[in-house]
Length: 74
Image (tube, rainbow, N blue to C red):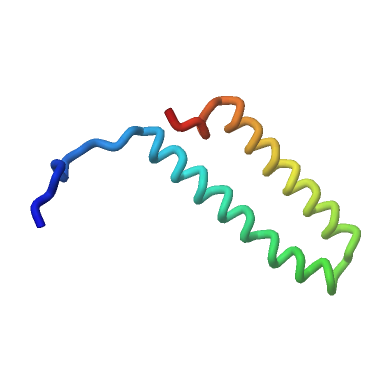
């Protein structure tokens, strides 16, 4: 099959920024599963407030990225 475009086509930096943000938020979301297991069998109050702090930081990071316009695909 003949290629219809050059293989040396440059991608926008925005593509890489969105990809890195996706990986970052995906990895942070994966940390919720061990905490959920610990919540069932450990010190529930400490683990719960630790989860609230983590989710707060995660939401603040998401709002910051959203405000900076990193999620807009133009």
